[in-house]
Image (cartoon, rainbow, N blue to C red; front, side):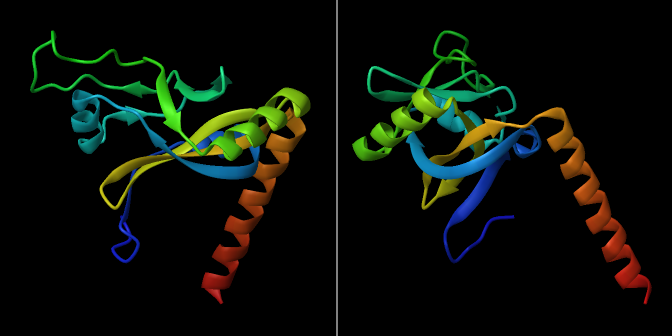
Amino acid sequence: MGDRSTGIKIISDNRQARYLYEILETYEAGIELVGTEVKSIREGRVNLRDGYALIRNGEAWLSNVHISPYQASGQYFNHEPRRNRKLLLHRQEINKLIGQVEQKGLTLVPLKMYFKKGWIKVSIGLARGKKLHDKRESIKRRQDQRDMSRAMKRY
């Protein structure tokens, strides 16, 4: 699943985000984690579906992302599954995002979580919510692509 040449191995992908939102820009961010969270992520026990990112006091935070508690350790040393986690971005990226989110009313959504050279990274997207007719249009376009590829395979 991962690409050996770049050292990227995808852990979790938020496919629903591309359906619900129109992604304008993507950013790669590091994430501040505790030990049991890293062990759970290595097992692939992450759910990005309901997650979002926000900027508070000049820092980027990832909220509502569920990382399951690590099974092999006791409950006392485990982490809170849905705690807020700090995103590690450059200052100029954060400043740019502050302007985009506050002035244009855009949202930050996590798109995928992956390993890059041993480090856990999160790809976040600057997104605008799709209206119902936009969602229908993307379904129609995907169905047309599927039909065209089937027709090409037949002949």
